[in-house]
Image (cartoon, rainbow, N blue to C red; front, side, top):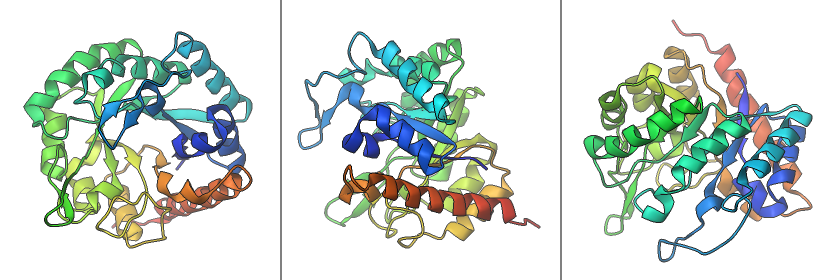
Length: 290
């Protein structure tokens, strides 16, 4: 089982080029191409910020190829990417094709694209059916992800697109295309109020599940912490993944964990993340399913 991690949290500290290099040196097999900088969001107002960078400029292909080369020179590949969100914003939607293109140029096999939180499977299928021919032309699969909304009155998450196993399966099956698959965010699945638990969702999705976002939480908030630091039952999760014969990467999205790190010690944080991912991968390899 190969392990990967998102690079957005490291990139905020040392830049994307150095982030890929450090992920390799820390011992990851792959890197998850975080493409959020294409369309940077001010989350206080949920509006797009006017920020220019390598990913939304004219030389985005050259920059992506540079990142790929840095990875390969250090013995690491791009396994998947994460497109900008929220897709409900037209300014974000117009970058999704570029996100797919960058995934292919980086060597990634899967581009994770969120559904619109507040649309049903039929409504979200309109966007994904528009994007699928583009993804196929680049040899890339699209994976969508289980989402959540927040109920301030109850102080917990509430239903959003793909939040339950059955709704997630419906989103995949209504499109019925091998190039459209599921990326299960384990932390989202364990938040109080919305989902029906990671184990149930894994078993419901079965072969549809081809990518993961792995992190830990208190089974209440979307903490994005290092695995084994909070309350999630990773032994049960690993067993469920083994039962469905999961064949994708173990990809961390523990971006909240590195918030307290800086340029001087971020490598140490990455090594700890790698150790947690490798422990999960070893548990998977050693898991016996009757």
